Length: 101
Image 1 (tube, rainbow, N blue to C red):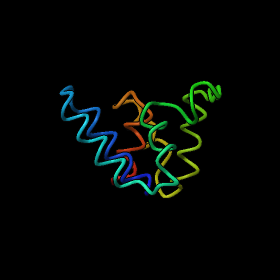
Image 2 (image 1 turned 90 degrees about the vertical axis):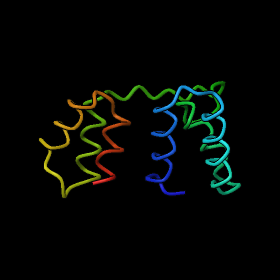
Image 3 (image 1 turned 180 degrees about the horizontal axis):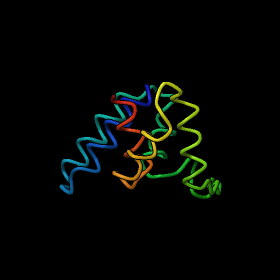
Image 4 (image 1 turned 60 degrees about the vertical axis):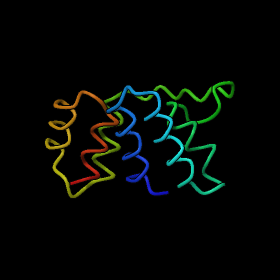
């Protein structure tokens, strides 16, 4: 699954508090994942890179992630990326907005 599609599922999850709707979104997301991607997709949707017991924390600062975004999207001006981040206040939301421009 492409990261843009995955980010759409995460955005849907963030926009609801209804348990049944969350379950339906997760079910749809898992069904759309390839069998090889399922564990990765589930971990990422929980905010982990790997299983929590594998200690996947990598402690990358927001400024470093903004530099990664600037290198990933060289067609965008650095100040535009930072403005989007200031507006959203969240790196995930920033990536979602940038990838849907």
